[in-house]
Length: 355
Image 1: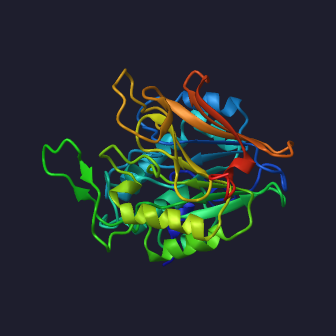
Image 2 (image 1 turned 180 degrees about the vertical axis):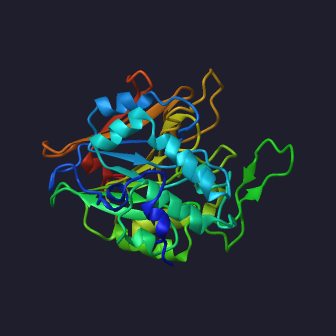
């Protein structure tokens, strides 16, 4: 499948340089020390939070879903909505500051809670890649789905960033009966249900065997949280178990999950059988977080929460220490830290649990 056509050259005043320019590390060979991320940005509303992100001088920003609220099968509509995001002064400053790496969730994919049944997924993929300036020779333009990975830093200080695609291949969700308090979705018992699809699962196994000291896996939906009734990996329990088994079988160390989607921020952690604690840092949304107090939903794995307010996330790594220190943090729209956990890279090594 090839996603190249004339629209690459006329994408709403986006220059050929933007489309074909390569994504590269801020400083060649330098390790990543400041990884910022976020999700859920409504293009029709102001986005002042970019100023706070830019002020932290990130090495990279990960846009992990609902980057716009497109919700259309008309690609001209999607392009126009991406153009509104691209015209945001704060977002333009971010693009001038650091690489912006992206995957999608349902609303920028094109349909609320959608999966592989969305009829315009190929066309939407092309619009997505155009806006995020994917190089013309990128593998993402040659295959279905927007999943990809990057490795930054020298040996001993390598960070692998894996961006999953939880939309293009995903099976239909199991809807809860009308009025069911557990809903809107229930865990599926369909043995054929898939979150990533065969090709992406094979690719992910290959990526996890690549050498890296720290691995950031970005999933547009939460991986660890399992008690709420909205979209999450536990809507397909066998698929989440498959992910955990793959992490265990590949002996992938240093894994941290970043997620979005929920219009709240929280840090979850569990023993997923990896031999070390698996953290899932959720940031949502950049300008669409809940605006007022609301009761906490159940999450048996939660270790920190910001239940309302706009927010973004940041992973900071101090590579200068013999055992690098990692900080997982959620910032609010005033630039203040609301959630923070510090841990050593040695904590994310198989065998830590049980010592």
